[in-house]
Image (tube, rainbow, N blue to C red):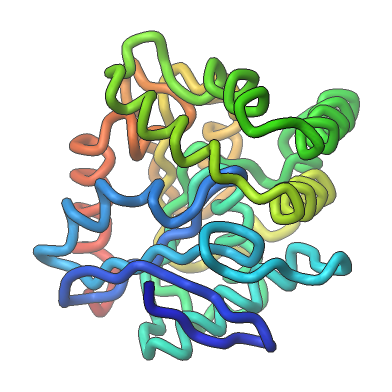
Length: 265
């Protein structure tokens, strides 16, 4: 995989296609492989880049002091190193939180935001008790064998209708998670609260949500849509949390239409 050095960290990424830039950030336990349907399906029209965040895939582990701003600054560094800015930036789940923080810190790099099945931070979207319980559960899981973590996570990530091949692919990706990266990402997600930012987002924004998302319910997306000026919400019917893998054709169609409307694209 190609790589760039950002803030002293060697970060890997996948790149496909030519055209206006589209950069994707994955969720916890995942890496750039989670964006394979987008790298393949959108590269006829766009330059699609999916990174391995610090502590995931083949990127190096970040220091224990790493937090949300560190992830956002590293993503900014990748965009700059590859000469992609301003780019449409998409993130699913935790990746959507990183995308929001990137916009907060470096809005000039973001031509548009695609926020899929995400949160205004866990602290900004979940009740305090639920947020604390989720963090505690994740930190405990970071000490478990990968097979046990996969078994516990899979039921909440896809709908009952997901094809077996999709479930197998996602389970394979999850099984390669890195405990240190998982631990740091969930701590950052649990501390994050971007509600103060939402009303100040001035770039075109698309929200994409699985109808049956069990981890970030549709109500979270509806609140974010109402808070972000001019944001649109596309609900993918019969779909769970990892909507880009479960229903890639619908996901890609919405992303393609959005990118065609982003100024400069």
